[in-house]
Image (cartoon, rainbow, N blue to C red; front, side, top):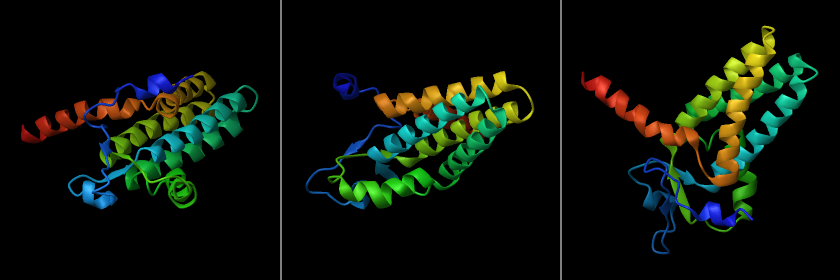
Amino acid sequence: MFAAPMQLSVISPARRSTPLSPESPSPTASSAAVDQVDVRGPRFAAWITTAVLVLVLVLSTFQTTAAAVLLAVQAVVFAIGAARGPRKSPYGAFFGHLVAPRLGPTTEREPVAPLKFAQLVGFLFAAVGVLGFALGAPLVGTIATGFALFAAFLNAAFAFCLGCQIYPLVARLRTQSARA
C-alpha cells in the first residue's frame, strides 16, 4: 500500500543515500570521505521512537508524571543519538547488534551528520515536552511531543527525515557565520 511513496525520491542532497555496488561491498570503501550508516537503521529507530511517543501521548491523558518520565527517557535517547551518532544510540545499537545481522546486506547508506542534527531537534522538542509535563503545562508537553511524533512518523513510514531536510540550511548558515 505504501510501496509507491517509498520509491519516490524525497531525500535531500544531505540525506541522499549512497548505493553500494557489488564491487564495493564494504561500508568503509564507499564512505571513506563521509561517515555513513545503513538507511534501515534510522528507520527502525524512528519506528521505536514513534511507538514511544504515541505511548507518551496516551499516558499524558491520565498521568502527566508518567508521560514526563517516559518522554525524559526518549530525550536521553535523542541526546545520545545527537552526541554519539545513530550507531551508538540505544535504538541504533539494538539494530546493529540484533536486527541488521539478520537482514540482507545493505544496498543504501546515508550520511551521519544530518541524522545527528535530526536527533538534536528531537531532543529539543522532547526537552520542551518534559518541561511542559513536569511544570504543570500539559498542553505544552502534548504539542511538543506531537511535533516530535510527526517527524518520527514521517521518517519511519515514508523515509522522509524532517531534520535531515533542515540540516543543509543550518550547515550553510553556520558556514556563513563562521566566515563573517
